[in-house]
Length: 251
Length: 386
Image 1 (cartoon, rainbow over the protein chains, first blue to last red):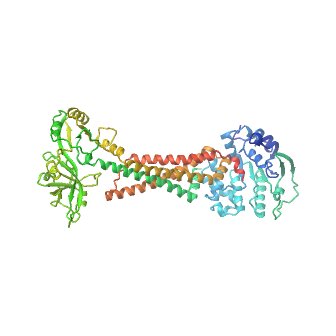
Image 2 (image 1 turned 135 degrees about the horizontal axis):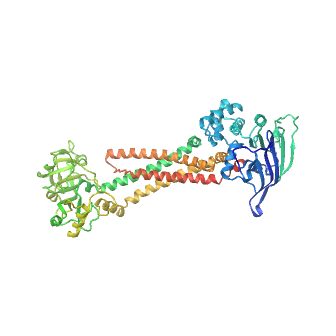
Image 3 (image 1 turned 90 degrees about the vertical axis):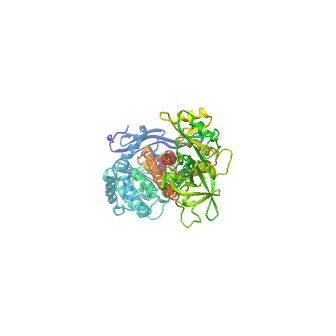
């Protein structure tokens, strides 16, 4: 079960072994994850790619501990997520995982600094201390001067940077990102991915990104390709390749 | 997280104001309507307060103080003969017509009391003296009479002024303080004998006998002894409560059972309740739906369901407190105005704001529960499904 002390992981942040997940029952039963096994290492960016409906988001949800699986095992930072329930799982997420959502999910009625301080408030940090820390992280992502603004005043790229700050403010060892560039133009996508790279490298974090935006594949250390609920290929990207955005919409 | 919950609430200005408005309206309608109803019910027992006596003896079929089935004059002596009774005096109570100086008529509540003892006289004389009531044609009027019977006069009714009750002269020798009557007419006191002169004659004219117990005997025991000895109905006069032998209680329940007043006021109260529930629950549910993805994101990020539920409860109760506070303040302003003007009747018993607060909290709890129920069905994984 989860404990506050981190078990030894030998550089493996996430270890998924033989995971199966289905939705529905009877004839309408949909087998979404089929015996999926995958590892994500600390300090790397792992991208889960594949066509829509292939199970990327379901696998990401399972790794994040927001969705249970039917069978198989998931160790995250050495903790067996598949055995955790209720409060333990909630506390584990609060402490160890940073979330970046496709639509950012910033609360529109509070300031950027308050949005960023949310994970600290969840962990019981005082509002003033949380806000102070939030402003430091906002500085780090280049949004220090917008801390008083509400998210509605910011561009998509700026909002995503606020979301990144929120995901990092409590210094989680694992960052989960769902389509982080889907709502961004090429320039902002580039800025955001550069940030991810710094995030993964600097603090030895694991960053798992679900995407089907092939403009950003070159930012990954490894790419796991999924199709029809299975991991069909995991390969390391060429470190000599310079990451770049094509300034036109793919597909 | 509580601060965050409040910021989320206050930040959505439209829904926040709508919630406040719904709960304000519910509070105002409930408190205002119930307080007018209570005030009206209190007016039905004004005669019992204005003619202070611990025991009222009436004809056995009488159920409320404004109903007069006259007794025989000899019934006063029958009541006096009861050993538990220290004193017993006749009282006349009836609605009569006063002719104004301009020829128009106003109704009054004429009270006739024993001239020797003056038992049942007004308790607070503002001008003049009580014993002057024994003078010829003397009457004591209340403040409302000064207001109502001054029409057509060069100056407000005052001591020494005269008017006619059923064509017989009445001279004002005193002005007193009195509770307003349910019928709306001012109270006018005179002696029992003179009250009979002012009133068109009939075979029996004694409205009631007021009495007091001998020392060492309780009011209830004396009333029971009077009933046993005379066969008349003897009510105690303590104030509205659970005792059916209390004339106030009996009177108010009579009005509740036999008039459409409670249905009329009750309908408005129910409407207030429905408006409160409908607006508060619907708006709060819409607020939760609007914020569902944000609340879901908080859930995914590690906020426990308990904590999220507490956030919704804090939000619902906050608008409840504010809406209730504003509604109660508005009701108080209305009540202050009504008391200043003298009508409509308003009475806010302490239980009314407490009960209304309970109702508002119940509405808020229901609204919060709807939100909590919706949120409980929202899996944190759904936040990944854009």
